[in-house]
Image 1 (tube, rainbow, N blue to C red):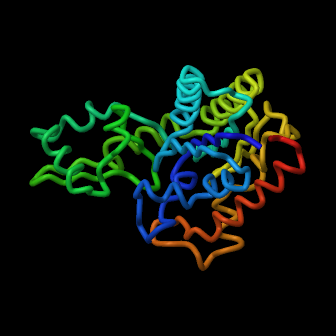
Image 2: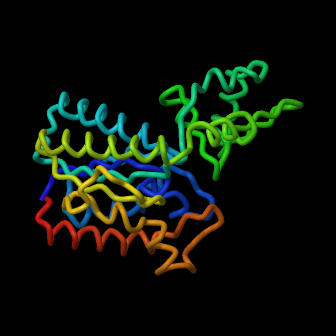
Length: 260
């Protein structure tokens, strides 16, 4: 088995709400299906670089950049299992500074949000200078008389001009094909799953590829809703229970297909 499991994805791979309703605490990562899969693969090291609200563009590029850094640090691709959870097609990342600078003294204000661990603080801005936007969970910041939110300032434009299958489906096809070929050429055992958006109506992906787990049929969210509806919490995520059993399904699939 592998020494390291590297995971990237959105809030479902992050494990949001697994430790408490509404929780986005980083401790959730130790209760996600990625963590449970790492245990079943007997990995010594578990690296989860997922972010709540992450876009597929972010998942794609950060997986490449993170693995480059691991290789520079001496990690052997043949000792690493890569798990990627692809997210909704209706997500983008924007310049955090351009959006936040409409707030007077925004840097000081944002730092105060971070200090008190306000859940609206966009941790992705701290780490990468971006803010994630999607139509299901927009960010709203209220400081005195100033209110800025992605639902009014960003989402309508993106919904009109970007979040259309004509654009997003081929973009996602290209990401999946490119990342799969890169990982395969470098010698990484890997598995791609959908977290919340099966890739329907695709023309360019061979879904018989063993590294693609139900990409065109179902998602982790679908699995949770179908099998554990009583485990859904206030932010439409789940307790740890579905994560445990989903990891078992992934492990069984990995063994059956000799992926690791």
